[in-house]
Length: 362
Image 1 (cartoon, rainbow, N blue to C red):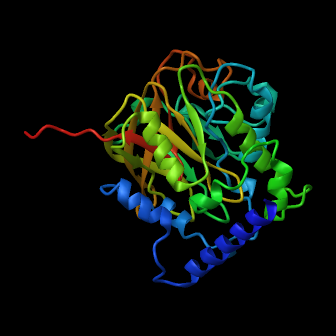
Image 2 (spheres, helix red, strand yellow):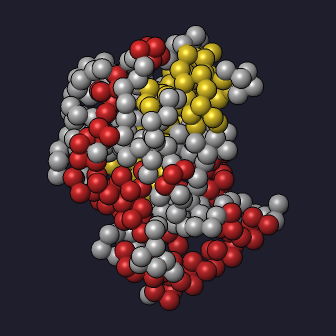
Image 3 (tube, one colour):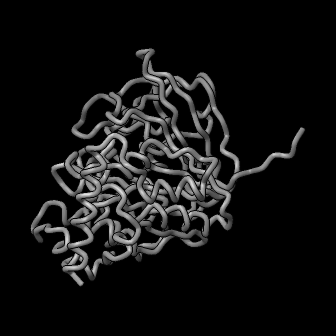
């Protein structure tokens, strides 16, 4: 079996590398699948890049943790039963040591009180975060829903895109590779990764995060291929008529600067969406969960330097009653569980899946 997997992976690597060298190569099977099942939804730039990701673009199977955002946001249960997986997630999130969507564990468990400082008075209540290392700069992490208004100004820093080295594997290959913590030694052998490699903690964190329980009333899944990502999102939302909503951000990232909101468009199809976040792994893995009662928006913003225009997809969680009272979002926003909505953006490559809403003709 191991030899079979190695052969499949080797064939995939050759095909991926060839695709990166040939400007007019045939579309990947995942791209064909997308256009067949989502004919009215253009492929997001980040997804298309993952389908055509040459392995040679990266020197490591797993992204550098320091290139990841200062916060992570995926798992927000109140229960402490997933304490150990949550600890492991810190290794994957890297900088800052917080987990945006991990509303389950107390901050002191991951040393969060040493990692953030309260925002300055001019940014109080905006969810601004003092950069790691005590720098005087601040960047918005969480924000109140009132900030999603034309004319509002917020400081943002966008890290560079760090896609998985192998991108999306063909479905038949991804389905053939074990994806459990118990199988990790065999997975490492299949990819030729040494057991003492610095990438192992990140891989283990991803597997544990995918296996950990989620908050009551919500659902979660991990997808290891583009086909699984789309089909599972359709299953959770109960319809095949869905569409992706993503942020339009520069692949190379953007330095910290103040952005002004110039346009806001609500995302229809709520109040429940499926949010998908890419995880640290040799190939692309998306961890997805339903958002609970939420409102979503696409927000056009202009940077202080004038030429830097971005569009962010933002989720505002309207029911935080089951969140851990110690979650950092409440500290940064000065709120508490069950209070005002907690909003955050979706970084480059992350996806909000929404039901398509068909409007009646006027």
